[in-house]
Amino acid sequence: MSDLRDILERHVSSGSLPGAVGLVARGDRVEVEAVGSADVEGTAPMVRDSIFRIASMTKPVTAVAAMTLVEERLLALEDEIAPWLPELASPLVARTPASPLDDVVPADRPITVFDLLTSRAGYGFPSDFSLPAVAPLVGELKQGPPQPQQTAAPDAWLKMLSGIPLLYQPGEAYLYNTCSDILGVLIARVSGQSLPEFMAERIFEPLGMADTGFCVPAADLGRFTSFYREGEGGLERADAPHGQWSSLPAFPSGAGGLVSTADDWFAFGRMLLAEGAIDGDRGRLLSAKSVRKMTTDWLTPAQRAAGELFLEGQGWGFGGSVDVTTRDPWNVPGRYGWIGGTGTAGHVTPSTGAVSVLLTQRAMNSPAAPAVMRDFWTYAADA
Image (tube, rainbow, N blue to C red):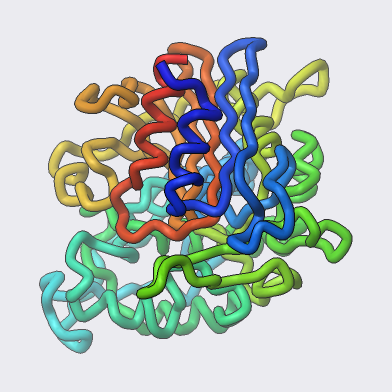
């Protein structure tokens, strides 16, 4: 069986990736490998504490932030979001998903916190991107690949969202991405802090996630990797270390805005495995009950099937997928986590006590996981 370094080096040496950092942990055994370079020019080697744009690996972190407010009883899962997000108090819904933007009906019921956490509020990406209500999500709201310096500030963003109809009635369907961004705005309004301030105080500092945030400080840009997309002539740089994440954005995206390192997300994963306990004798971030709710699949079979483009047979908890089948070697029932469109992945498997983190700098070409992730997951499942 190939070891972790062999797997990562195979994908780097093929030219498909400039570099990668992989971490696989089970109990006290932690295996970490950093291979390749931080950019295609090879100006700096990849190192264990290289910083990456983790994209949608942000979603589980945002869900944890929301659950801290639930535990403080500032929110409840069944609460309507309208008192804090009045812009979404009376949403309109497309008469059918394929209806024009002006063919709408009133929502059957208000949107709740639970709807946002399970990505079933009616906003987001379906499997069919040609539906009329999808275009403004991409164009006006900058949903999709993270664009931190191009997205409007939260109040203006939410006002634009209020003018876009829901694709489905609240609670009816799983739709990808947008609910986590709405959740980030909700957290800020309920807490009275910006999302970066709240996450730093309530999650990153207690867990020792010193390199995680919505931008990279100037002193750390030397460890920040470049980000690439596939072009006609090979990999093309989409963002450099001094680019969109070098300053705090107007809209801190709860769906995909964070940067982090393998060890930082490992600390987050350990907390989930410990059912909310912080490593050592430093108390708890969440209760075990809250973590179990996060890592439970809340989708119906029909909702999972409709979300197949993104879920590939998995279920969905709060802010992350929950494996419910064993159709692939790496698919272990109960495994929780998510992937990022920037080529990243982080999961925990409670049944085996495993945490796996893969960080690369190449954008995914589709919602389906690329070969390097599948090879990594197969190794992690057997480690």
